[in-house]
Image (cartoon, rainbow, N blue to C red):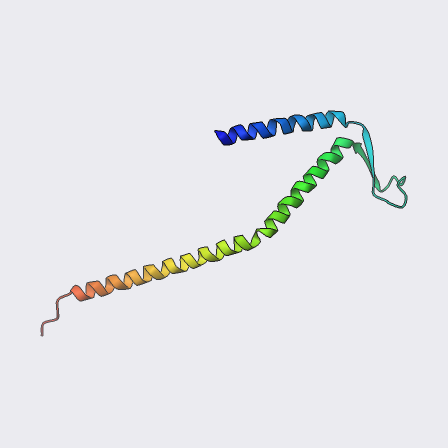
Length: 114
């Protein structure tokens, strides 16, 4: 319940802010990709300014997620190795338990009469 409340407190104002930015920045802006001739229409994109803002936010989110993913790789690798080692020790314990049961059943058999 608290998590839901926190999400509402954070995301509702953020959504309102994004809508206000979109409405306030409807004018067309041109992004020139040619630094030597900004008037070159082949390497320029014209769109409402809020499109460029949203695009920058999306690029930032993707880059941040990628950096986080790569920096946490060592922890994922360590967890994977420890899980494999735990599985190996679990198998070894099962094998030893089976051998112990086998020895216990052999020890409890009566001695052969001859």
